[in-house]
Image (tube, rainbow, N blue to C red; front, side, top):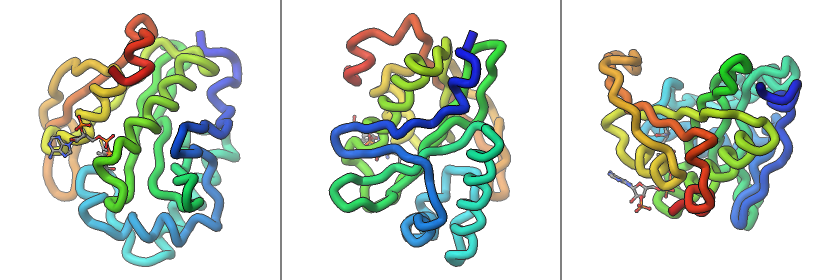
Amino acid sequence: MIYADSYLYMPDLNTPRLCLRKLTMHDAPDIYHYSRDTEVARHVLWEAHRSISDSRAYLRYMLRRYRNHEPASWGIEYKQTGEIIGTIGFMWIQSDNSAAEVGYSLSRDYWNQGIMTEALQAVIAHGFGSMNLNRIEAQHETTNPASGAVMRKCGMQKEGTLRQRLYNKGRYVDVDLYAILRRDYTPQARRGQ
Ligand SMILES: CC(C)(COP(=O)(O)OP(=O)(O)OC[C@H]1O[C@@H](n2cnc3c(N)ncnc32)[C@H](O)[C@@H]1OP(=O)(O)O)[C@@H](O)C(=O)NCCC(=O)NCCS
């Protein structure tokens, strides 16, 4: 079982380059800076933000989820600049099955520097540690192989392709489902090997 209330608690998660922390309304300009990019939005279920009002609406939605103790995302703060450069968090959590799904997105300025691998490793450590999860899932469109690379680098295994699993931006898309189990969470997986 998941520890009572433990998944409602979202502490700051620190890594060498990042601080994963709860978002605030002050983060709207940073969120807008990267969420307006249609390349960032291409493989996620939200639309690229058309104005900073969209970013503020997203932040209000996330703050409401924090308040209601619903699964939510951390902002990914790049320590060197203090800027929010992405988000990562749980899409759903099933306490009966001790399972959860992670989702994430990152500013294009920071792609291919190992940032999301660093963030996902921290969230997985929190999931198996404080939250006492048994299974953590993630899924990506088959046309988004960089996301699959992140999952594999964090020790997740591909379990299959779900055909036309999602309707995204006018088309049905195939997704690859990945998961890591508590029993797979070896020291090598922790180090991303
Ligand atoms: C997918 C995403 C999270 C990756 O984050 P990132 O910080 O760039 O990831 P990392 O640098 O940790 O790792 C990226 C890996 O993908 C690989 N990669 C990049 N582009 C690739 C491509 N077109 N095909 C195959 N692999 C690719 C990189 O080589 C790297 O692997 P390596 O370290 O083994 O060389 C980021 O691109 C993103 O946020 N995209 C937009 C939103 C999104 O797609 N979210 C995920 C939805 S499932």
